Length: 447
Image (cartoon, rainbow, N blue to C red; front, side, top):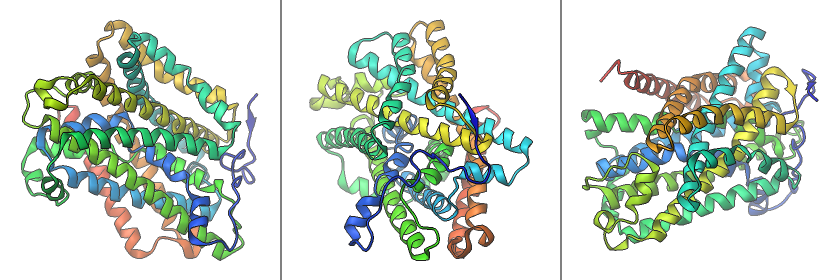
């Protein structure tokens, strides 16, 4: 049964809002442990299957040069996610709720549709990644694997009964699998340490090379996901905060920001490892690396990656891909609930919300899989289109976030400082321009 939420008293993710106690007068590390968790759910969005191909292709084509682009993307993400957490902690409302309150019903409805479509676009990358991983690991036909991913709606429903801390722990475990797999594969590939260090310094070559610039725009433009901003503003409220106490609010902002930055740094490491792996193993080769299957096959081909090639490396890659898809689907489910409750103030059973969203996302992927008879290349083209739509949806989340967190009327003394506000607007404008350029290039309107 669905129900209308009270416009004043409704809380974001009401069943877990303020559910985690924070020790009073505890030391730094004990307090940090209490606040740690939401950051890892946020970080998952920055290392989902949609980022993999771009990062590895960047290394394969341009060696370590684009590491500086990954660094820039991560810094922008840290800034925006810290603002998102601050918004939720200070106001007690998430970005979807605040956006709806400050717009008309028609505009609010339009923004809700855009946000829901962004969730579906994110889902497409997760479905493709998980479906292909199941095929690579177990030989399951792609169509069947896609159908299995539709059933993962049950995962979060079971996890929610265990408590939010359990969800954070499970996602952290899946992320650890991804990190360990790629750290191990990079270690075996013996990359150039000096080359890696040099790669983190910006190069003017990026602006002068059209192919390099395009790939750079892909890394930056597809890094910040709209649903992560809604998610961050909501799950920052899972910790108990006494909003009448200024010091308590300041403490929550401080430790939530530390947690967010620590976990996004982890995402930065994973994305760097992906690019380094592409550079160390595939730079200078003639292999095609445009698809997950290509990467899987290349890791077991000694003519491409040399003596370290083995079926085990390929299988580890597939395991990491599956872990990435499943961890992303957990955060996607939470984001879908936040967006529905925040924008249209309608609460439906979580399984209904998730099932409808997932089925709408599965439908185009399944149609492609059936029509193209398990042709992964065609199906993975959908992943590109999903990233383009996320680029379109991004301004609808970023602009309100910067506006609200810069408002002294809304945020009081916790509003963005002047330098933070200008950095945020600069990052926002850069992201929007890069995404417009990406869209125009995808449509063939610019070269």
